[in-house]
Length: 265
Image (cartoon, rainbow, N blue to C red; front, side):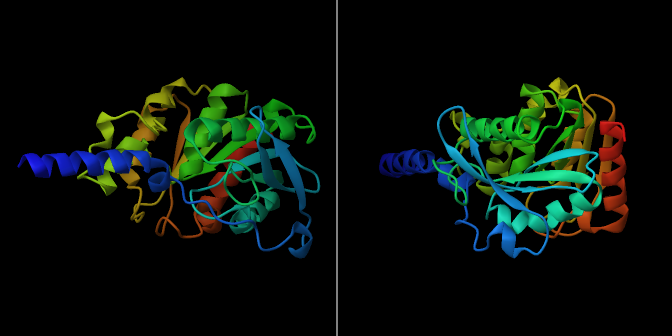
């Protein structure tokens, strides 16, 4: 029994050391350049406050009502989010897609504190080079990006916060996906969205599909319940890696209505 316990502890320490690899799944650099996409899009470079350089794409709306800072989900890179960005541009919003450190063409290695700085770098570009007032900027996050967008809404003035398919916390997800590993007992990557929700003071919309097989819709509902009013709940459809609410007619209409309302359009 003692040998088994020792082996378990050794394995646990190894898992904890590899925790970032259990959380982050960065993709390679985009295989296409913005000029290859066939619509207005340009590459920009973002400098973080701690010295990293992030790859990003800016998609301008012809007569923008505001700007969306799009914090994407865990795997892949910004190239796979260009279609979602185009849907937002069609609503009248310019969009900045950016890759977290260690993702795509961005330098560095991903980590919780670092992803928060990455979002702040994106915000700095949108409000400075992009020329958008904070009252016209919306933080939009999908899955892991929801945690990053939420923290951005706490650190910087924004018009609103949109979360799609977002979890309550990494320990909650670890308990769901790796029930044999007591990660909740150990410090590490937290992204404790549930604990932060009632600190958000801007309007919030939360979209989640009841068919999400990775992040249960109950987690999205818990975030909505914890948020300060006004909060809008949007029920999506499809699995976690489906195109998402931006490609479902009823959901898309509600997203557009929310975005327009928070920027005063």
